[in-house]
Amino acid sequence: MKYDVVVVGGGPAGLGAAVEAKKHGANKVLIIERDRELGGILNQCIHNGFGLHEFKEELTGPEYANRFIKMVEENDIDYMLNTMVLSIEDKKIIALGEKGLIDIEAIAIVLAMGCRERTRGAIDLAGYRPAGVYTAGAAQRFMNMEGYMVGKKVVIYGSGDIGLIMARRMTLEGAKVEAVVEVNPHSSGLTRNIVQCLDDFDIPLLLQHGITYVHGKDRVTGVTISKLDSNRNPIEGTDREIECDTVLLSVGLIPENELSSDTGVELHNTTKGPVVNNKMQTNVDGVFACGNVVHVHDLVDFVTKESRIAGRNAALYVLNKIENNETVETEAGDGIGYIVPQQIDTKLGEEVNLFMRVRNIYSNRKLVVRDGDEIILQKKRPHMIPSEMENLKLSAELIKNLKGNISVCVEEA
Image (cartoon, rainbow, N blue to C red; front, top):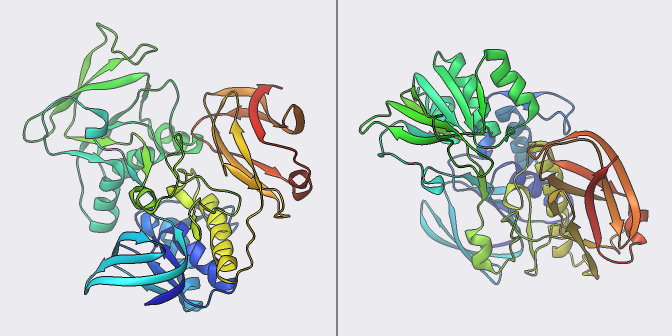
């Protein structure tokens, strides 16, 4: 089986990349998806808030996914469901599907496997292993796709966006959400989700608190929470127990890059995703990456934007229209956690969107971009928080004149 472009993953990133690859001249495009349907995590996100940037409309997750699935069908793009990619070597893919092992050859590959949730084991949560402890995403799937109610009295650990949305969802379905417990002094989710999912339903958010014990042997009966000091150690005398039958974990997402790593793709220490340039090209010839497998996004619209770049350049690679010019590096300066892309091809002649996250909460500051010691761009920001991605657009003219590596810092406005 031979294809021009093979996309691994049929979520929003994979769908966008496949459509764009086909539009830009790749004749045979294949999406490989391990789930039973295309759309990825969007299928279980039945709330609205998707598509404001991409379609200028407020869509639900399934509605957003459906628009791209239609594009896949209209462009005669092949896809395999219930199929897992086992290995990639020299652009030869071995996958396992319903009929057994499948060998596929590709000229270009786009990695779009997304990310997964951190589990109880990842955070060493003390206690027995009773029923009633779920990741927030697993609970969301059980409720929204399988039709099961996972609990009636709930504590949510971590204030990531999925946890916040599940706080509202559980409440709407008749459960009592006792609290959202967050170890940081700030939420890990979007401000709009704090307002719409917690404040509107009077659900308390306990910042700088941790769950120190999960009670119950067969089924969760409660949790002990404690206030934390600046080193995240429990403060003596602040322990209290909250009765509940369910604990949902929303304690972070990890890009799924075992396959990338086995393929020889270089991973970034902070993002845990592939190091990419502004073509979304990895260090492995003909292998591109996009979406949450590169870095965890806060909006699916940004995933789509990134996937379009990866898909277009994968097609150009197939057509031998892609050049590998010299690149400069992007460097995260004071106050910045990371920047994607990590490399910029200065000869590409296109504007570049730099995506980044700040390390702390800042008010009335500015983002400053430097080429060496020279300031080439600065943008004021009234408010920045780590959970909301920052985006800076560098014009093609600015990039063309770069002399060396560029850095971005948070500075006083």
